[in-house]
Image 1 (cartoon, rainbow, N blue to C red):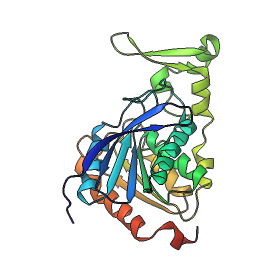
Image 2 (cartoon, rainbow, N blue to C red):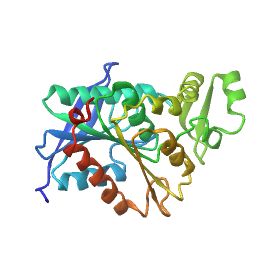
Image 3 (cartoon, rainbow, N blue to C red):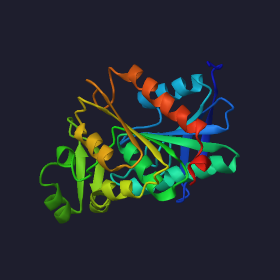
Length: 266
């Protein structure tokens, strides 16, 4: 069923720290809303977020894509860690829509956003369809590639590391606190806290150059109600495989709409 294009409205939500989170609601008029969460140093305008929003909108499903603090148009300062804090930001968004007589029925996150939606579901237990797009299972990995192999010694000595681009300009600062936040975020433990009624779909590219596809297999081993889909040849941002995402994601979201949590005895 193809609908007319949804009205796109810019909406601001206050988080628990009184920071304004800015997002775009693709409003089809449906009571149900799917919330999309971007990854590290990204934004709501990342092409995967926009493409998925448009595809879901065409099916009559309302979508909200927003910027985490310190990213895109949202207030707050950018932080390297903040995994659990971003899960709390997502909670502020869910509460906002619940208060407006809407219902967030699914959350989807890409990369770091994939971690955030899993952490969210492990803590709040009020959204029962979760889509983890290329999230990282072991957060101790992938740090040396960005910060250098001696990152722990340097940060203990200087209390921060400035990450520079090829031109030598500082792109962002990693503080000791934010690094420890990441190192102390245990996805294995979080996944064990997921309700059995919480349906999780993990999608990963077989040629992901940032987060190895093996991480998706680890999630598959421990999440109780889990579906795994590997996209052959896809990289971390699905550069040449954007069109392959919707046919996997859409049925999973629709299935969640047909079997609300109440029927699962939550």
